[in-house]
Length: 302
Image (cartoon, rainbow, N blue to C red):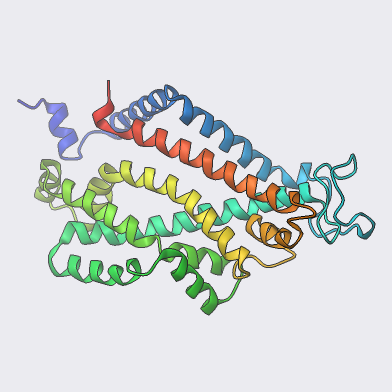
């Protein structure tokens, strides 16, 4: 037998304070479970440090990223240039720091764009089903049939290089994945009692989807979003490496690897430093994503 409180929650009639307390308790529980996984903690610490360095770059960077020291071209590590310089005499450490801002912004921007569009399409498709579901899914199948990197290269070649165009080129290929995940979650939730209860009190379809169904389907989407950030960063680096992403003199890790490859035998550090930065960020995000997956999985609750 349901208590009055259970009925209020079921029909969405519980007061805002009770709902807020419940959300806070769930959030605290997820944090506790996440803190028990050492690899996730390491990933979170690494990401906090990386994001902090990116935000503080204008303050801590020793030079401006476009400043050239023609007397110190291809210089090795020194007191003046801690990580040396590139072929144009630009400070490598400075460009790595500024490049982190670009790479992280593209990674988060592309992932957010793909997550929002994909989640909305998938939620509508999974909730309504039928012809709506078939139309949306078949449309997204067209994009999913093309390899992500090939699709990104094609879109980038059509739109041109640049920050915004790179985000669009990378995010389009990720939309079907988010849509299918949201669709599956919404189809699972759409038949549950609380959805029928919301319909019985004449809640609008939009409210049912975005107020009731979608919030209960977010766990797998959050994990997918986290993991997608690392994929977006690598995709952006790949586009910049072949000259279709961020263009010089703007610093970006993939572009730095590309410019350093011609000096790989004489000055390998010019390509290895940005490649190492990409590796560390992807490693940290993957650790954090694995931890979130375990923390949000209800089957693993103690």
